[in-house]
Structures are given as structure tokens and as C-alpha cells.
Length: 75
Image 1 (cartoon, rainbow, N blue to C red):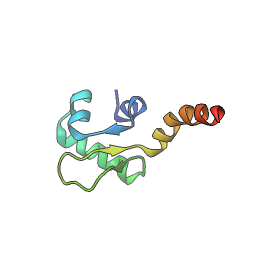
Image 2 (cartoon, rainbow, N blue to C red):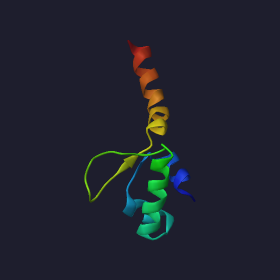
Image 3 (cartoon, rainbow, N blue to C red):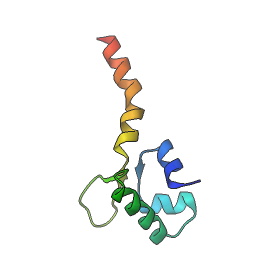
């Protein structure tokens, strides 16, 4: 499994979560996340220095679309 596969199931990630789920060192998880940040795939959700989390906004929009369509059809 890769970080991109992990994001497909949940667009929110943390370094410890990626490390645990992918069976990699936290430093490796951090580098992978930072690489996806540089590519514009991930954005940090807050400004904290510790216990940070990131989101893949494009994936989040895709996952939220069915709920938006359902709400708009009910109006």
C-alpha cells in the first residue's frame, strides 16, 4: 500500500498514522507527506508544530460530492 492509496480511503493523514498503517519510520512518513505538500496534493490543516495533520482537498471534495448532490435534490 502507498500513501496515495491510504488517502483514497481517508483524505486526512498524520505522521504517526501514515507510519503505522504503511509500516514505515516516522521520518519516512514525514518525507512522503512533505513531498505531497510540495506537489500540491496535501495541505496542512493547522499551524501547529506538533501533532500536525494534512488533508487532500481534491479528494475530500470528491468524497463529499454525493452528500452535496443528495442535499440539493432534497431542496
